[in-house]
Image (cartoon, rainbow, N blue to C red):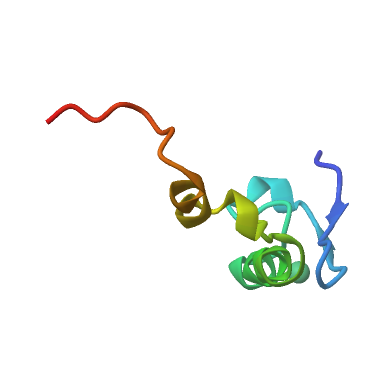
Length: 65
Ligand SMILES: [Zn+2]
């Protein structure tokens, strides 16, 4: 007996934890959720980008020839 869970994307109910795509009902819903994060919330502040850190100064780790 498995508890039903609800897909956070489309709202279908099933035993999605038994699926490799769980807790989503399908890989499609999983991709939609991933896209939401990448598009709306997953933002790296410019000041923390590697390029900005390199430009910020020469206090990086010592470089052996
Ligand atoms: Zn779904």
